[in-house]
Length: 365
Image (cartoon, rainbow, N blue to C red; front, side):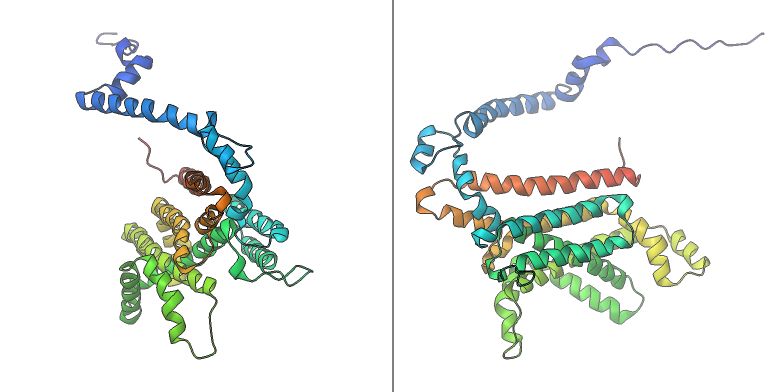
């Protein structure tokens, strides 16, 4: 047929644009600046990584019985962690009863993991939380089922950090969502209250709130009435995190197109039905990354309770270092607790990325 055209086969890419060398050239040596940065990073790694591996593993001592024997090895003294790990993980909780905070820790982690599985997002999940948190309270406090009573002044270490972070996130999230809805409300009084609260809380550091809750709040309570110090710290953490969550959720609400609100109105849905079924699910999908960043920051900020004398993971490590027989191993202690913080924070970050992919909100290049 006249004018017909037979397409030719696609040509392969040039050989210098495929393969390992092409990847190295494109990513590492594509410009003078990239070459300089690559050389500097390789130099820094060669200077730091071998020395770190030698100190952490090759010369490390895992079985020394005394501090002097550990120091003689010239590397990290992981025998100190072996000797003091129960104090670091459980604080001053009675030694013979430390199986209770251990079980409570696994219960908390189990409830959180169940909540992360999408197929478990059912109404009965609320009862899992109620039962799980009740079991944690029974294990930690005792006084029932033959368990020895332990006042919360003796709680410490990892279980206390998880309790503060878990309760902080569990209560701050719904409170923050309500604050975000209130700030966008058309009722002036509610909007003004939410704006004042959010701006006031976001304008002060968490340390000041913890200090106020520990020192100043008891001065305003009626005589003979007191609130437990741990509960005061927990309330301060919840109030602080809720303000940041509120602004993040408000950003998600503002990102929803106006047509979604108009469509919800056209269906005759009430305000709360619109929010629950149409608007909030979309808004929360949009703000998954910043929300998880707030949760990670909240988990790490629980270490600030040390300023009011609560025996969290950081203060427990400091107490372990106060033993005269094992002084001088602060690096090992803080590397150990840093690893614990990293495992939990990295897990939250990876879950956030997986959740974004499942909800198809990720923007990959």
